[in-house]
Length: 109
Image (cartoon, rainbow, N blue to C red; front, side, top):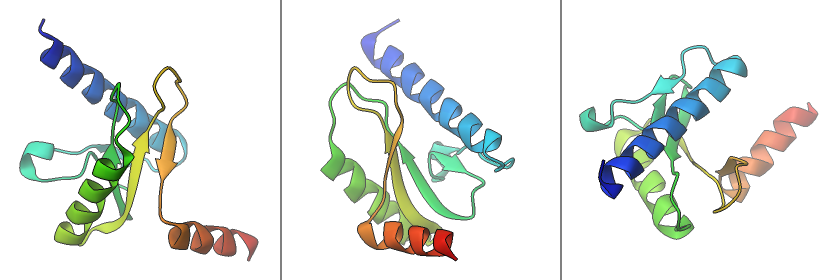
């Protein structure tokens, strides 16, 4: 298998794992999107547009630009980038500060 095929498989596996995380958190409709049909990496969580990255090199700016552009184009929700830092296996989510403030203010109510 070529390095490109390996990278694609790792990315697909990472997307499936994050969809399973969402399933376990109660979002039972979450699944990998059909990217070739223009869907986000994960669908089934209304109001959120997921861009999921499993790369050896962290490119947060490019990832965020893609998530923002695609979310605006599809009008399907708040962009969120899910990734991990190289050498670490802890998924992280990147959202805007405004979105974060909204989430924590709703949590306080």
